Image 1 (cartoon, one colour):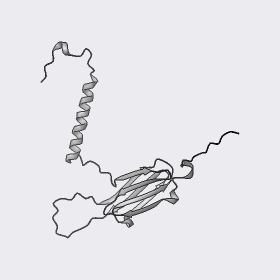
Image 2: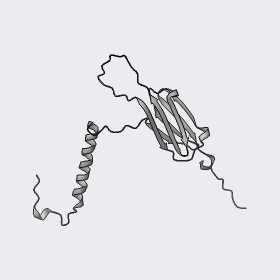
Image 3: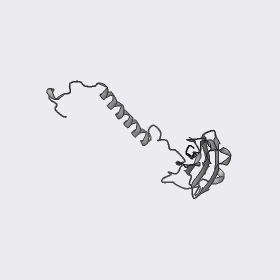
Image 4: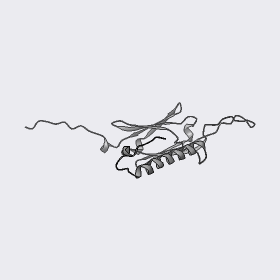
Length: 153
């Protein structure tokens, strides 16, 4: 315990600082409990995505190892992209004792808001080596265009 002399104390002490410190410690405590499995596990976001933008399109890459292309459904509604699918469990045999099962199986659904309007009828998707690549072309009105400046006569 630190010894603070009476003259070393600050003149005005903000009482809310202690409440903020306690709130941070409670947040840290509850995060620790969730990761240990007492209050449920921390939510996983699946599939993991990379969303990038070029001048002409939005590009989305999703990690989908173990998901067959026929088990995927991609839809675009307005400015929302939805990826639905199912990762099927691989069974080794009937009398198998697992030591560890960290790969999740089952249905998944991921929806993201796109940063700009896209042309839904021109969307393309390819799946190879566990990566789903989606190209969402932008509508013509939102594409940047350059205007040439001419000298005044």
